[in-house]
Image 1 (tube, one colour):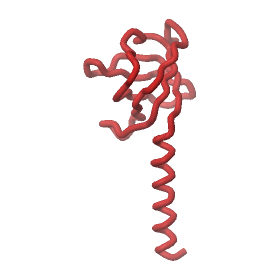
Image 2 (cartoon, rainbow, N blue to C red):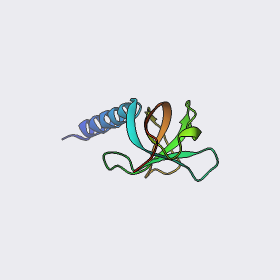
Image 3 (cartoon, one colour):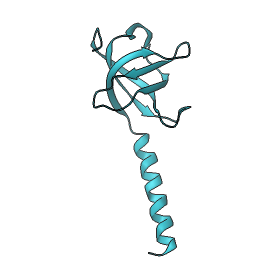
Image 4 (cartoon, rainbow, N blue to C red):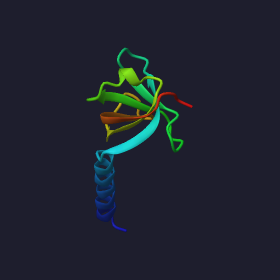
Length: 99
């Protein structure tokens, strides 16, 4: 394979990954308060993925801390590259308690 083809393939994969990251998706888990005031995390995420940092939200999440919720939003860059970080655009209450 020529170097040109490698560059084109790498650029295509990078673009595809960035496009997928911006796609709205939903995750269900336990809403907890984050380390900083006014910040939130989704823990015990269904499907076994790690915790989700919620960097921004257009929804008032504070009344739902300790509840099982489904959040919908897009992936964004966070402060920790190892943690999935989202901007939440919608939230659905699933249960009043977390497992």
